[in-house]
Length: 314
Image (cartoon, rainbow, N blue to C red; front, side, top):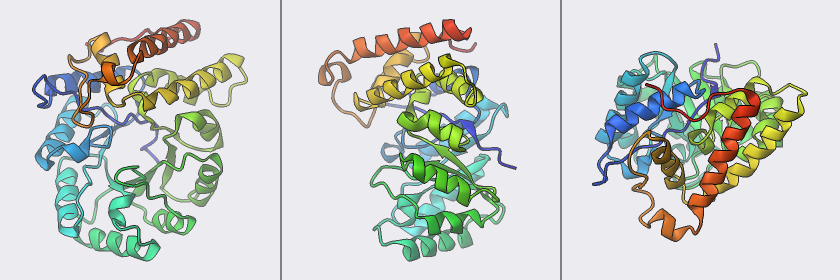
């Protein structure tokens, strides 16, 4: 069964004023995602700032999200940042032990030196031999430290494994997504697009949902788009255009811009990150005004679509 699909937010990590993790804020954020249309949560991912978190923190974040979710929807996690095979076995085994529904492998960690298909397959098979035999897996073409897209041959290879459940696609190319959907049609491997610009067309082409960063801003609107992807209602196309344009704001200091929104609606208190050292409002002129426009326009769409305005569960 293809169960890791739909609206899959790449989760933020809230921090306290001293840059320690705000676990109360993380619990409220978890509820916010679920309350606003998430079908699966992706904890300990790039948006969680895993390159700037200790393994202990990555594990505790995952455990916190799982406990707060309490089985309401699936949770997947990665925490896959190590260079060596031994480091990666330790990371992935620890995430597996948390009880997540799938452990997500980062493709550039399967081929750290970008040596090609043979190196990727060899590393994956070495990992697989040392991980629990019943582990459920997924793949993520994470852009950091470099974007390692999978070839068609590699897609076919991974689709042969019954325990490989999902690919977070970062090709940002509609024709590639169509091809990947066809290649995985008779497998357990689900393709989920992560690019806002092509989100609607990708959904119609067989991407089973959306896992882009603006699920941290308006996941409920993406959920509506996914549910109505085959609708002829002009409002659905209008929404698709709006969401695509909003996605361009990712370049204005993400993840801090998404965290700023959450401070505005009360999910958590601070919008800083470990990724971005500069003050968001100083580095990106008028970014708060831009965010306010996005939030206001999002609520206008909610009114038109008879959805609930921004809210924090509980």
